Structure formats: C-alpha cells, structure tokens
Image: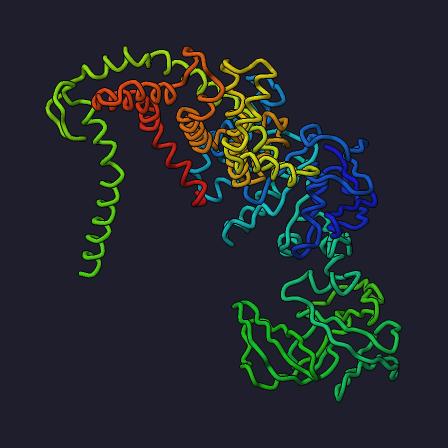
Length: 367
Length: 272
C-alpha cells in the first residue's frame, strides 16, 4: 500500500491539454474517486498514474518514488478496465494467475492466492471457463479478481461498472467498496457518474476541462461546492441556479429577479449581483410558510414521480427550479405551484467567477 | 414465392460462376488422367492412367524443383511472418515519431511490381555474389512479403482492444511478452491467412526465379514447369500431369487450413 501524489501534472496531446496542472494527494488506503464529464481529463490522469500515458509535465509519486519514467509493469499497480480486458484465450484461472506468473511467484503460492481471490469473489465454479463464456457481471468480477490477486500498492479502476445494468451496478458498487475496505489498498476510481462517486469515495476529486475543480469528502462537495461547476455536477437532480440582485431589508437579504422578490433571513453578506443555487430539497411546497422564505409561485413544467418522493420542475421569471415533494404531488404540467426556499439551503456564487461566495457551514435542516 | 425465385436465381448465378472457375481445373486434372497414347480432346476422360504422373515426375525432374520451391517458400514464409508480426505490432499498437511516413514506405513495397525492380535487383545480387543461390529467391520475396504482411498484421493489431495489451503490461509483461502471450494468440486466423497467401505467392513466383537462377538444381517448380512445357509441347496429358504436380502442394495446404483462412479473411471485413 502506498499514497499517491500528483504534483502540477500536465498532459498534452498535440495542441490539446487533457490534464492541466493537476495537484492531488491520495492518502494511503484511501478510496479516491475522480469524477467529471467526458473529456474532463479524469481517465488521462488515471492512465498517467498507470504508466499507460507519458507525463508532459509535473511529477507523479507512488509512495516516495517518482514514477514518471517507470514502466507500467514496475509500478506495482493493478487496473480494472472499462471493458475488463480479460485475456480471451485463457481460462479464468489463468487470467487471475497471469500477473503472478509474470512476477515469478512460486506455483503453490499462485494456487493459494488465486483460490483466495476466487473465494472472496465467488468465482470458484468459473475458474475453468473462458471469458467468452461469462456474463457481464461475472467478467466484471474476474477483472476485479485479477487486480485483487496481485495485492498491489494501488488499485486503479476506470469506469468498471459502466457496462453493467442498473441493478448489478448498485450491487457491485457495494462489493467493490467492501473489498477495498477489507484489503485497505489505496484506490483511484474514475467515473462520470456522480452517484457512484458519492456512494463509493472516501474523497472525490471533481475534474472539468483538465482542471481539478474541487477535492473533498462527499458531504463537503454536496454541501459546500467550491464553484458553479461542482454545484451543478454533484447531486441528482442537479442544483438549479438563477441570477438575482441583492439588497439588505430589515436584517434579511432580498433576492430580486424581475418582478420576483424573496426575503431570505440569516443570509451572509453578499455583493449586489449573485447566482443563487437551490438544491431540490431546499425548495419545498408552501404549506404554512414555516421556516421557508417566500412564497414564490411558478408554473409547473414537468413532474417526476419516483414513488417515495416527487420532483416538480417549475419555471419562475425565466428561471427553472426543482421543487421537492415528499410522497406524491398533485401538480400537473401547466399548473401554478406555490413554494418556498429553505434559507440555509441556498448557495451563493459570484456572478463573474462562478466561485462560491460563502461556504455554508450548516446543513439543510430536515422538517 | 418471390423469395424462392430469388433463391433459385442466386443459386443459378453461383452455379454458373463456380462452373467457370472450376472447368479449367477439372479439365487439367481429367487431361492428366488420359491415356498417353490416344489423342483426345482437352478434358475428356478415357479411364484413369496414373502413369502420366510418374512419367512427368521423372522426365520433368519435378522432385528437384519441388524441393527448391519448398525450401524457398518455407524460408520466405518463416522470415516474413516473424518480421511482419513484429512490424505490424509496432505500427498497430505503438505511437512513435514518423510511424505514418514509415508505414507508407512499407506500403510502397506492395505497389512496386517485381518487373519494375528485377533488373537492378539482378545487378545488386550479382555484385553480392548471391545470384544462383537460394538467397536470390528468398530475400527479395521476403522483402515484398513483409510489405504485405506488415499491412495485414497492423490491421489485425489495430482491431484488438488496446486495453488487452495494456492489461498485460500492468500485469508485469514486457511489450514482447504481451505480444506473444496475450495479443498474438488471438490472431491465429490472421497469421495463418497471411502465411497461406505468402506461401502461395512465393510458390507461384516465376519471373524472379527465371532471372536470378540458372542452376538446374535451384530451379523452382513453376520455372521447371515452364521448361518442361517447352520440351513437351505435344503431349497434353504429360503437360497436364506436370501442372497438377506443381499446383498440388498449394491446394493441399489450402484444404488443410481453409477453416482458418476463411475466418482470417472475414475478420478483416467483419468485426468479429
């Protein structure tokens, strides 16, 4: 096991800068998720750590060793690929044993370690099959097993769940987390799926256009996003935004937009113009107004009923917000809906830079 | 009804073309089996006279020619296969400066016909003292076969998912081991197809052997056949028997490897 650190790491492909001055520390034994939209540089960052891409600038360390010029096979890193990359002509057993044989591990030792990995992943009955005879989920477990059996310093996973169906994905998420916890190996996990990132990562690094936008634990990213991009990327349904001007009124801050005005008590000091971020759970139907700022009234665009909860898309003064209902909502598209905002749940961003104005220490209170 | 009519038409067209392709071959085989004494039309059968083959074998010195052809073809296939696999692997999986330009240089070898280079080649080999040796037949053909083989193997290596070689390298394999243990075993149909094609082209090569070799003992089968035909212009059944003897090794090879061969041909066209 080892820590991993990126220092000002840059990767250029010709004119394109895929990763731009990435500085990131992954602690020993930590589960770090790199998340971002496609083209954000997360996979390139991972491949540089694996040694599959050269580094254009900066330094990558595994433990105390700078690995920039170290061949992949000498980095003691195991990787799970998106397409699993199982060796098709070899049996599952040989797939698992390949890395150990290459490293000249004693035969009895190989046997023991393969059996052990196979047991923990329930691959026992599949050991004599070839990859072509496996289902997607089984192939995925073999790919995990191949990484696990090597007992490397670092695990790398490149969107390992993206080829599984939704149910299997949720199940495997838990499985990977459990295994990582058991073996305690430092893991760098790449995904574009923020749900995966939130549920699996000890910490999450959000990347966009080759830049690291923010790194922190899931709660920090959710509650205190550093900028508009992170705020919009993390969370599902996503945070809604609207631009507003501000004014102090009787100790509250009045957010005004067109003909709309809402007084928010306990708001921090804000500049004249801000972008306001509203998570769905910070916009609730107006019942008696207790604890909410408002009321506001908008027209319903769409209704997403998920059973236990319902998200209602509302347009108001040209802004789109999502209002969260417990249980079912009676609203239909085209209806008028009255709702209020949870003051502590609002996030404010600088209109020009997109940076968060005041990191909010409190969480959204539940009613 | 339309489907059935269409099917009938398809089979008719296929049948006609099969007939066109097969008729000359069947004709030669039947002619080779004719009685040597009776004068018959091409392709007519009047019993089975295998004596033509032994007579042609002895008179035509085909034992020696076939041996030369076998030596040359085996050497060309072996050399060009190994080098094509290595070059194709580099072009197909590695990024290096000048890869594209270099690849076009390789392709040049596919485009230049033997006729265009035979004369300078002859003088070069004469200067090197290599004319009238097997090397004069092996080296030029290995060279042109590598052009094709590299092109062919590059296409195969590009079709293999990149992650497979990468996984092997992370698993502790060198590029060399990743090639031979992980990637190439998937390419057996491609390699077999390449070997069959190179074997066939080498086996049938005529001009190079004609120019480079004058020693009777080094003559290859097609060259020997030409000389044999020059000597026996009237004995059709003997000529036909000689042709069958020369063509047989390629046919036998193809029959044994056709399963791989067809799979290899298809894998280029259809992503399997």
